[in-house]
Image (cartoon, rainbow, N blue to C red; front, top):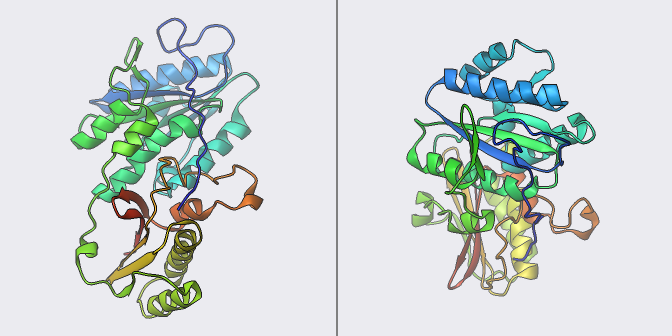
Length: 335
């Protein structure tokens, strides 16, 4: 399974005066800062100053934080009508490629020439370690996916988050913001290295007998029909099942057409839950950014969209490179 991501590894922009404000003409390109906070009042003080500085310089301003954070930040900015408020669940509880596309659109639509869009963001990491991993990866991916864009992100993290998420804040942001200064972050990790080291959580269903097995796919069309026939027996929302079927079809097609044989598929079902692992015997998929955008950029005519589509169609996509080959695990759930 071979795919390529969008690699733009330069992260631009520093605060010329060592504080929150840039002096002189802005150089459009990503600035990605983090604020670790103990109280909402701390966020309101720091973020409102940062947003007001941006508005004064001609930047656009966006807040996409938890409801308990949004109100105090808006009030501290004097309820300035130029500050846009985005429902963070609409952004961060969608799938990660959707969040990336939405923020790209904000940059295109709202950045004035030579200026940036400043976004105060607070990721909703979800409730499971598998949810966490999707958004931990997102924080690293955006360092490359947004590198050329006129964006300045201030990602705020409660110090009460679980330790792995606090560690993510420190490892995925080149700079840290405090009340009176912005400082280089000594804990920052190169995004590709961070993604390669990010553990893939175990999936308990994979230790149980699968509902469907084909460990040496010889008839792709037959496999497709078998997966569809099995999903037709699952009691779940029709749109969720159809999305999952499409994702399985895309990744299985990649494994058969581009991977090294034998390719195989295993499908598990449980109430409100679907898991499918597709393997091939090659080790060609070594791009940690794969699937966070179309492999060939905006030109969709060249294909390379399998992983990108799967990340939009499933709750979780985990890629594992092992001695015996490469696997992609798809999972989704519903209430």
